[in-house]
Amino acid sequence: MKFIFDRDTWQEIFGSIRKNKLRTVITVIGVLWGIFVYIGLSGAAKGLDNGFEKEFSDIATNSMFVWAQRTSMPYEGFKIGRSIQLKLGDVEALENRHPDIQFIAPRNVKGVFGDSPAQVVRGLKYGSYSTFGDFPVVDKISKKKIYDGGRFLNDEDIEKERKVCVIGERVQKELFEKDENPLGQYVRIDNIYFQVVGVHKYEEGGGFEDDSSIFIPFSTYQKIYNMGDNVSWFAIAAYDDAEIVGLEKDIKQSLKRIHQAHPDDERAFGSFNLGEAFGKIMGFSKGMNFLSLIVGIATIIAGVIAIGNILLISVKERTKELGVRRALGATPREVRGQIILESVFLTIVAGIVGIICGAFVLAGINAATAGQDGFPYTNPTVPIPYVIGALLIMITLGTLIGLIPAQRAVSIKPIDALREE
View 1 (cartoon, helix red, strand yellow):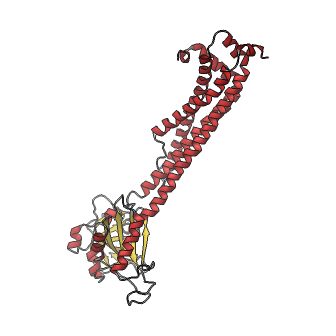
View 2 (view 1 turned 60 degrees about the vertical axis):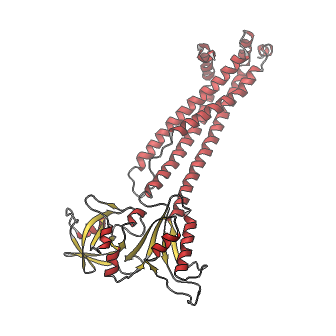
View 3 (view 1 turned 90 degrees about the horizontal axis):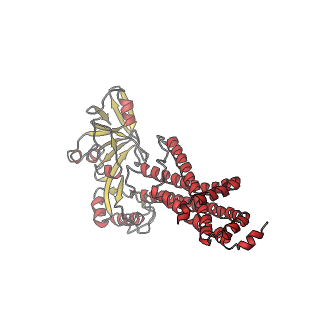
């Protein structure tokens, strides 16, 4: 291994590179481009992955929404087209039958599914806003970001049927003065006064609500709108290891048994499986990562093969020189080592430059996409172990490909090389 640190070895390597500057640069660019493509695509895929995780950070990804519809099949004496109504008692029944359910939130709303929104008045200002009747558990399924000083609904609000509400940003903007603190103030919702206990910041992905939504206790909603035990829909979150698609089917089958709908009636209950949708999105992201790996490795291999080709040409051009070295006592091991060292050196240089260029591009993308709301893209980076792994693969390939021209150089007989013109 002494030849690695031998000055003459490196002089010969750099001398060979100088003789073929253009060809060497073009070949190095091929390897550089390979790892640059890998870094760029992997970083971009990671940024997309991070963006999706950020977008869904405030909602349980393994969750779903289930609601009742009309039957499309007759069953046990009931006619087709029967309207089904979810009940508050369904919660306990579903929790008992399906242990994979982590949280279940019965929800009611006025002003979303075609009915008129609640009329909200404060002083001389008024507006129409969707109003939700909720339990505190809904905050565990779809996190509500409450501005400092305020709070969301709690269990005591439910038990005491309190007339309190959490309003959205737009409600605050339209009913209150610019610098006025709405906390503790009263608004009149459908002619009933409610005290504002919190203001929620709207973020996409939370379900049916928006920045003009108002949340009141479920029990209070039942009372003022005479809902009884009726429920509009269920928001359900399963444990992380639950198979969400299968659970969705099982829950709908349970509801069919509870409400006497035909087991094969697919229209009796509707649902939206957020967990399934999230799984498809993350599958797309993983596919992008896999694609970037395949494309990057393929490009790296192509570049390394180009290095092998240029070294083969170099060996052919240096046939006489190599013959002289062999005649002067150079061992096959030394000749082979020099050719392999040149291959590895060019590979490492190209790899490092490619990594640096890729890092600069990702930094530029990160700066360009930072702070853009509604665009699922955050912090495009490649983990250091992946970068080191890619570089080690390049070095390994560079060593292996260098064996071909090295063996060609060793196979040259000194007497034949000295005759070469």
